[in-house]
Length: 622
Image (cartoon, rainbow, N blue to C red):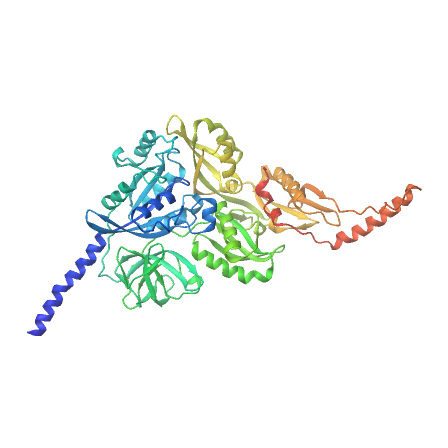
């Protein structure tokens, strides 16, 4: 009887524990903030943290979640940041997991990872700048993942704000009602309470079953030199407990959950993180390659059978070589790159060697800003001084021997000789540019100069035009974005996505210094631009390379044909200074003697090339 009554008691307790978990899940909201660059995401996130008292008045500062010096200096978000807030609404306590995301097109992979861990998104639109290209791009990412969108009109307090017109643009884009748009100001905090209410009312609670086997998605990771790798995850089903033996499904490795918890401004250790919640995991992992973003964490004893289908693998757009200044630092550079890859999963790299620079890495980036940030982070966070080669994109080359089988060319030096080459295909993109009507002519001229073909032109309003172009990716790699901002006086926004490979008349332009090919300065360019770029490159290198004791010829060549040449004149000592008066033949004799010495020096002379020379191609239009 006693045993039976104990069983009955246990049965009556079970639903209560389960209902508590269900109640907890019902009061969780996971959301991210998406917008175009500089529309006020980070400032609005600061106001949300202040309104929910997640941070004290002492801890408050501008761009609170941007914890990198680089982010603060440039005023941009580079990494997504997750933080948990507690909010009481109508007497009930809610847990809000916020992920602040970057706005620049180069960091869209960070946005896609954040979206995979959420049920809703705040779509921020600047009341002065209206909808821009990256607003639309991020919105489509969110809609593809079935996220609930809350439109927020930010910066309504600006004198240049035009809330009525911009609200109409948002209604046209989303198909929502005008009363669904929340007016706010990140600067003053106006409208923040309405945003918090909308998050609770409109964003659905996470779906998941706490009783099923553990199933958690890794959407970020951070390298900590003292504690190893900190994994940031979102629990879909089940729960993760401290000390539990867990398994990473993609790698098959098993670990113990030494510490788990949730993310406030600082980490808060907890005994359990349940379904629907976002948390961190520390298990003493030291090797960067053991953690893959997008992997599924499960219980080692009773694993789940289903891996979470997260986001796609990253597709690099721009390739460049990164080499240590001193070849002895190669292994140290590899370790630094692996740690950086943990923090930025969109960085892709593989070992390569160059005749001019020794051993290094061929790295794939999402764009030029991404490349610049990686180089700066290597120097700041890991004290690695590196040389970056001319950026290029990935091509497909076909030889005459096998015209049907193409192979990938990431480095121009891998391209076969012109006599063996059948054709080369290069990646094309569909570019979307939104600009003011006044600048349409300038933007079109720039895109046509960059081999773009216009496919569509739409007037969004009488003032704002959307232009679509098919363009080679190689043409936007260098200075396109900067020049677009210049010709449109800063009023153009730009976004792109790949549309496949197309055959192009491309040639390999080699640069010879002192008769030797410098493979790190080679570039694949369109045949029509070859002479012009070759001439500009030789002129630029003549300015950048310091003068030596001997003449240095700089030549640009396509195959065996030299298409441009400049000469850096030697530093000369005035050997005729001691000859005053007398016959001219005495001076000539001294000059001939000097000439022989210079010739001998040139035969053994090595040319020192500064870092700026490798990036000279980027500044050809300066």
